Image 1 (cartoon, helix red, strand yellow):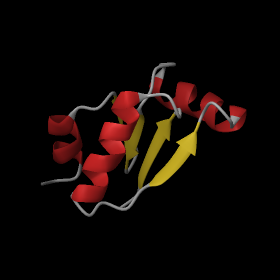
Image 2 (tube, helix red, strand yellow):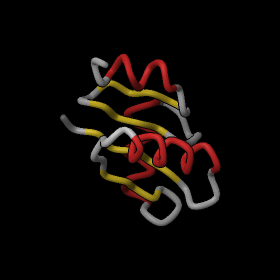
Image 3 (tube, one colour):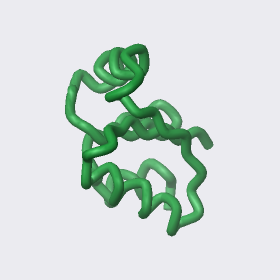
Length: 76
């Protein structure tokens, strides 16, 4: 399973999403889009959005911290 989360340091929902993933034993790669323009462009290309967090679970894009959609995408 491939999980990536696009975040910024000041985003409260990003922190909540990362904590939820950790608590549920989900490994993920984090991309700080405030510091990495290439990843920021990638995030916008994938999601059509500039808001964070954007979570990519095996190619399924979730904008925001939506637990129900995350669980559904993880097949839980």
